Length: 430
Ligand code: AMO
Image (cartoon, rainbow, N blue to C red; front, side, top):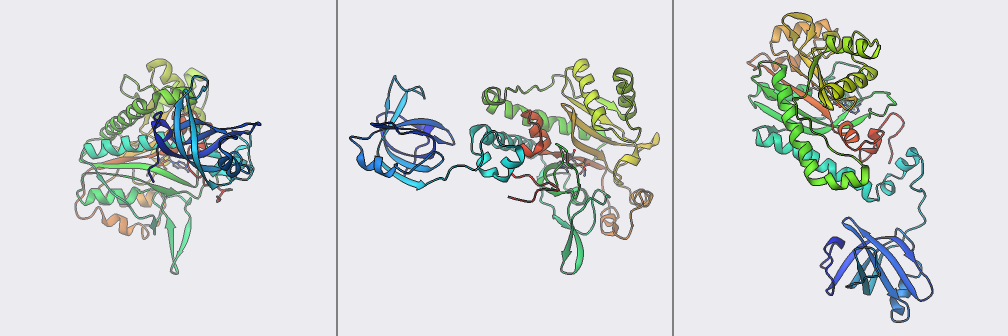
């Protein structure tokens, strides 16, 4: 059966359309339906006196039911919706809905309980259409610049980020973990001479965090590149990818994003500013009187430095560079001139961290010493350490949380709204 999307309806042609009943009015002599599919809405009009069969079939049908209609659309100056009215000659009732258990005003928690119903409107599917364009833009940029797409294993025997925030598995009697990041295996690709790799995948963190930016399972965009001279090469590459992906989103969705979410996409004209960690702390203290932690950049400091950069450079992006080694993972390369610091960075966007990255330590002996310095059992890291024994170029890369980026892009209050199905400490369904 040939199906026509609502946006493609042409008048005076016999066609078949399928969709959801958004509204149904059933006054005395007529039935009026607003039918929605993924592309738009159309008014359907049924004259009860000339269409008794269709009237009978629709008698028990309420909003949210799914129907398929055969018929002809006519231009009508009385109809607001695109000036078109669809007159069916036949109807099939595909699914009769019950009254919905939630309204649009329900609490976020309730809406997440019924996520499939919550997602049932244009503003919600726009989030995922934008997500599709965003990921495609990142992927296209990577492929066009010669990167190889990889899929690293999600079941591992070591924790990639060195922390205890891992979900443990019983792997046929042997302990294993759900991976926190593709970190170790994207580094392995550098030792395999892949030069540039990327992955968009699912990662897991056993973090009992109840914030608007943490999930226990999230989608990350990661890349790793070889033969770099410093972490600045990585920042340049990421900047290129983000400019490309954001301009694709802007080109494809600008009008709809403005109408539905009242957002515009600003891509900075200047290079994304880069501010060393120590300097960023001083700026925040001097400009806003806020004394952040000396070890790491806290969420409050992130907000202030973004505000500063927006005012000073008109950029929503800012790189914070050269973090204290103490605050970063064991694989970060220390700065030659100051080993307290390392060649790692975060990218902040509109007040929050969306990316972490670093040049990695690729020298076997130094890396082994750093693992020991972090108090990690070297036995567990033996397989990983082997990657660096038989020749490995300088390299580094990043990990970017797609949901964090999307939530900021659409001005959503929490990443729970930006992911298809949220997983958190208190939520493992639907
Ligand atoms: P990091 O742990 O900072 O670095 O993670 C990288 C990015 O992933 C996103 N992210 C999360 N998003 C939602 N919920 C979470 N619990 C969560 N944890 C992290 C954030 C963050 O910036 N291996 C390094 C990356 C690298 O150096 O290449 C890493 O995983 O947007």
